[in-house]
Length: 274
Image 1 (cartoon, one colour):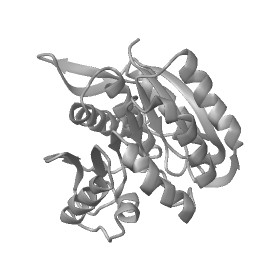
Image 2 (spheres, rainbow, N blue to C red):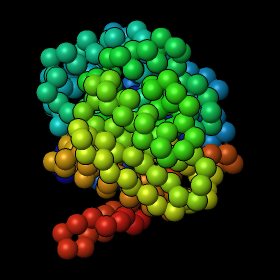
Image 3 (cartoon, rainbow, N blue to C red):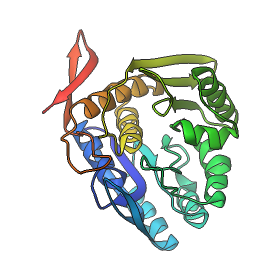
Image 4 (cartoon, rainbow, N blue to C red):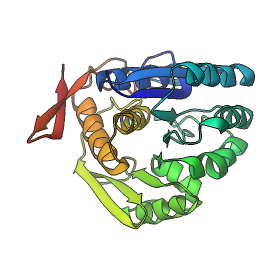
């Protein structure tokens, strides 16, 4: 076991996204997952039908208690729930600024449900994104953060540049919501750019892909990978997690988190089920 990841996010009662997906991902990739739960959501593969917020002081206490004892090699931020919860998280992390942070700016669920109000979006944009080692918006979230419409690869690249200018060290803008037979993710870090592209897998079992991708990136960074390599491997992991989805539920079903890396010539080239 290598790489301690503190996950700060909401709980998904259906197990496909949120804290549940995050723990499964980190464990499958050989890391050690810890959590600070921000909200309890009532959801299944059809959508979110209720949200119960965890008190802000309890969120902060979870974070401090874990970091003071076990520590972390990377922090993953998912659903914060509210601006007040966001401030509590940032206050709790004040003394741990040196720990890398992967920020998944959770504002829209796969089902289309909004998971935060405008004030929450504001704190994500202005306080979490500038702190991020990697920020991982999907196209609708990138459009919100960059305040622009996104419908093409060129738009996605432009939005990633705007988000990087907000202060993020690196951006992985995900193009899964865009039309086309090819899914394109855009990675920017400094003046470097990389495109991760693969054929679209037609499947309704894509619930939790954003949580899963961000947690995989965090696990790889915690294990010593640079952001570019972490994003490359995480993209491969999610692709195969969709391909090998178990088929549960009648709506947007979960992916298969139980994958192990396939290594050729010392390099991870894909993932397969255990």
